[in-house]
Image (spheres, helix red, strand yellow):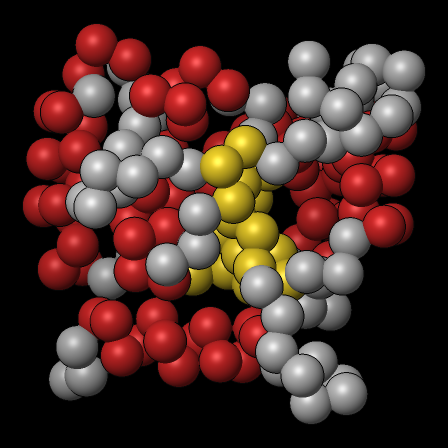
Length: 168
């Protein structure tokens, strides 16, 4: 079986392909962005739509984020999210079984934040993919988390209740 890093790199190569042959950077996507995007009555819905319409970067996430987002969405919105993923609007990475002990160690490290599986899985993906920028509403936790090189994730500005793309 191929090493985990090789699998992530191969998947990122697919996610990075554009029709013009040039590669693009990827943004990590957390649950809150997806909920805002697919829940029409969310105060950040317009911000998520506007951001997405202007975005030219690839979007990547992990399967636990999709599960968590579906938990917060109505059935119609869940189906639209899954169809968007099928149309390659978002690249979803599965967590290899060998990584779960690392995820547990991250949960222990950030126990005081009561972090969840989606958060630590995104930290794993950030470290493996070397992507640092994230779309999230969870600014407190993602400002606290550190990657193995002790660097912080960069919070992408997209949130505003008035629909502009500013972080609140």
